[in-house]
Image (cartoon, rainbow, N blue to C red; front, side):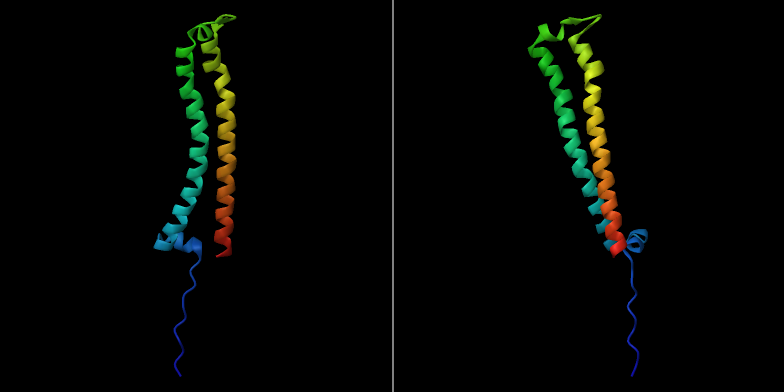
Length: 110
């Protein structure tokens, strides 16, 4: 009897390193899992920041209202926008790190 040829066991990380079709599927899945949080974070930020000029055009008396040495428009754009950006960025980093941990765990199991 002849010995049957042994099938080579290829790990997922090897598939990725060698840029095989299977490795490409893994990387595309990782990129999709990172794109979802990016779009989810970007939506409210763009809506919030993009809506401010419209709000200021519709309510010019509010935008021009003085608060100390600056107007409400400058106060909102120069100070109050940053907490929104900080929260969105923090959430995004957390979501992407979780996706990468999940991806790494999947690779370890394969």
